[in-house]
Length: 281
Image (tube, rainbow, N blue to C red; front, side):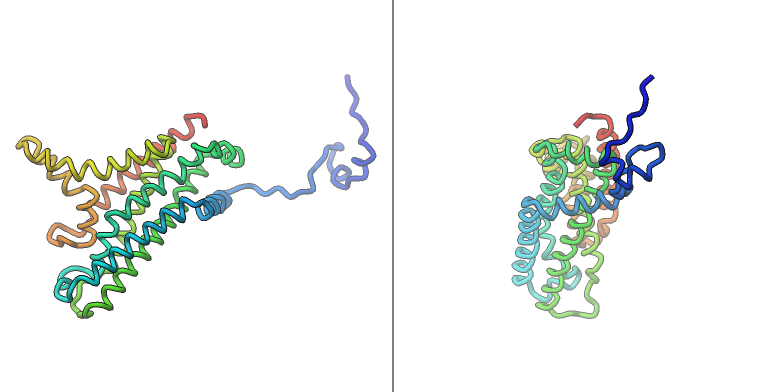
């Protein structure tokens, strides 16, 4: 049997060695148990320091605010009798949503492309915590930027045109519009996590947005497929945003469309978490 070796002189002089039971070494460096807050801080540092965030959000703001201001300046007071002042922001969001989709994919797929995801998972072996932090931080950033841009367009439009006391309230369109495009971005993030490829995930999301907007024109040519075409036309992304901004108040205010997107996003998020733990990096 081997006998325990006596401590070296420098070990014997170390208070950590002397205080440890049985002569084992205890590091004097304090060890803190990790939690979700550390993952959130890490992901916030990542998303604010990469160029893709600045470019995509910058273009998003340019499209929503720039097009919104341009449309607002070309309208008259009479055109806002039964629609909210945020209507001009709708035209910018039609293009701006592509920016949030792209950013949502890049938040996760860029790390797989560069191989940095291995470092991330080594530092935080609980993978679900990393993915949850990515989704929370992205959603918060996307919602804040979207709400700011839509609200700014609404304020600008209201200063240009007479503020009638009977004017349609537009606060709900700010929240629902920002929520819709932010959920679309989270859906893109979940797809990016599942596919792990930037180009493939972005192409898939463009198909999710564009195909339901194009297909109804062909489906409604057939009597047997007309019902499917009408439903697809009612719930596709462009028409869903139109409902949120009350372009056609007779058909609702976009609650059903927002609920469908939330359900699809939740299903994609669950699938992303399941696949994350079942596959290697």
